[in-house]
Image (cartoon, rainbow, N blue to C red; front, side):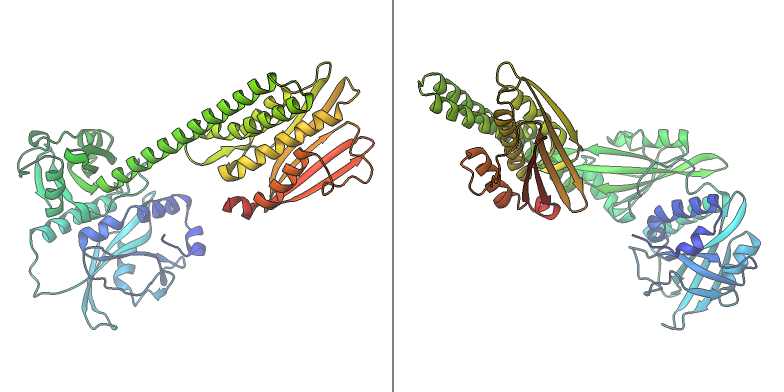
Amino acid sequence: MQSFPDELITKLPEEAKSYFKDLVRRWGFLADLCFSDLLIYIPTDNNATSFMVAAQVRPATSQTVHPRDLVGIDYDAESVYVVESALRSGGMTFAEWVDPNSNHMVVSNCIPLKANSKVFGVLARDYMLNPLRIHGELESTYVKIFDRFAKMILAGDYPYKVDDSASIPRVGDGVVLLDEELKVRFLSPNALSALHRLGCSSPSLGKSLADQGIELDGPLRSAESLSPVLEEIEGQQEAAVTFFCMPLINSQRADGFLLLLQDVTNIRRSERLLISKDATIREIHHRVKNNLQTISSLLRLQSRRVDSVQARDALAEAERRIRSIAVVHEVLSREIGEQVSTEEIVGAIIRLAQESVPPGVELKIDIEVTDFEIEAQLATPLAVVLQELIQNSIEHGSKDREELKVTVGLQRFDGTLRLTVGDDGVGFPPEFSIESSTSLGLLIVRDLVRSQLRGELRLSSDDKGSMVSIEIPTDTSDEA
């Protein structure tokens, strides 16, 4: 990500600051088109006696002129006189100079940058001068396209006034140039290959893409809005290519279009694999949930056929524990990904617990839960722990009472998840210790908190009731 000299940028007027950020976000392809390094110079004082390089981008199509990072470096006006000239004249300037580091001849083409008709900086195009090199059609066309954008920058037509695109592709995957009548005037070699993958067997110049089997509405939409349009075309054998269409504006109308192509076949294939994988995972969770519910139903049926009250209670407890695990899988079978909402899990566990309230007891549950996402591997033991604690409050806190209040809290603090379950019942017996407890439910809580959640468990009790507090390190939850 491009870094900027913040102190310099913050001093710019808001309009200039916005213009600068928009240009830098969308200028990579310009460096590719002109086979040049692009630099933005901004004066460091009101008299423009010195300039600082505020941004820099190198081309992906040729050798760089400036191997080192120049952002943040100051230059006096005399040493960058061509930059100063563009700033003061408000027009394009050119100069040739010898790079002292490489001894190469360098050409600088400077374009003033304006916001609200006021020049605030200069865009410099630096490239090596090689008179012996013969430029082919591709290079000549690319540079001509850059010249169009340079004129648009000078006229205030670029960056586009309306542009919702997050970024603009570089030119590597293909360039297509259309004229005002949407006829193809230039095709780069990579563009030819991309069109082949879409089923266009012999792309040619002088015809529209529609006449060659590629239906695009981007150019028409782009001409109407004078802003870029992104669309995607799918072809044979799952081929997919995006077309980023930019209007070439002249006197407030589009008289041509630049299409930057990007082959996204592998990206779309990976996305389809991820979607398929996610659907498979959700199906697995759905089946696990169904299997757990089947086991729960079998335990419930079995409990009805035993005469021993102790055996019936044990089967009922096992059935509730299985259902609490099934709650997590039920949520995961509906959601995309391997994270679940704490609010949804707590709500489902509370509804499950309310089914076991003894007759004649009115249960009131106060919930203080912050909704956030937790990993499935953390959610399962957490759901079981919560179910056991609420069930323990109901069983022991409601004895000889017609009303019971239970409070449930789950919050995330810096580095810690905190679960609390309390009630206004009789509390724990004097000198009660979870280490010596014979309660299977509390032993399950202890073991899950220590072994799977790697948390700390605290019990407190007084004449107002009991409270269980569990703290789970966040880094442990992340690993889960």
